[in-house]
Length: 329
Ligand code: SAM
Ligand code: SF4
Image (cartoon, rainbow, N blue to C red; front, side):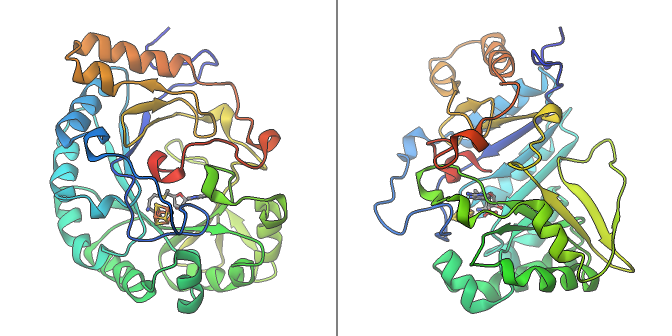
């Protein structure tokens, strides 16, 4: 069996890496307002360690990397990291997930560093509601950041929207309209029970099918055929739209059979599945100076430990314990 093929015959080619657990926002579904437990700086992987691990990962078949967090753009010299990741031979695709607060200043340097695909999280188009969701007044900064990212040439620009009943489910048609006017790929993400701070309850959850039904009152949605490099999103487009609509249905239509991902947490743990707290510690052996062959073996072990499917819909609240901010989503 190839080193990147798991026991269920899935080929693992995609590494999602949280570069920090720190964040300049405090989203109500991700981080607590107080008593926040942060990792010690010494426990967070250094850039040298991250680069070494990505190089090793290419030896097991990883070709695609997403840098996320916490908020990746707040980590010092992040542009430098991006530049170095983009230069790694055999990494064919590098992307970033950000809350967009610092994008206005950083979009151009990031683009010039070599990353051209970006996901920006924005759950509401209403500045007051934005403050309620993120507990910070940064709506204008994110909106301006999106404009600059577009002007600089990022493509696609994906806008991640976590839909929560009673919070932003009244704005679905506004996002539909945004996808018509702007070349943004609006991706509706099902609210997930991840970490103690997600405050997930079944009453706040809305399935992609319900979201799609509401969007269809705006106009017919035309399905975009699944391309080979597409992720788990089901893609659609409204008539004459500049952008797209996508659905990430992690709970209602779990995409485990086509999962090609491995995650590396900010503190150096390989995580076979987003929803399960099973982890392979790669930082300790790395810091003890183990060989590249042994590190490769740990990637293979994490791949071998990928479960057939996640159990979040059974576990419901508290699907996993680790906070989303250290995993990266
Ligand atoms: N700070 C960056 C951001 O917000 O884009 C990157 C890290 S954030 C953890 C990555 C993604 O996870 C974001 O799109 C965020 O909305 C999403 N996310 C966080 N908690 C979630 C939850 N409980 N359910 C669904 N998505 C969640
Ligand atoms: Fe920060 Fe992203 Fe979590 Fe919001 S979702 S608190 S922006 S890490």
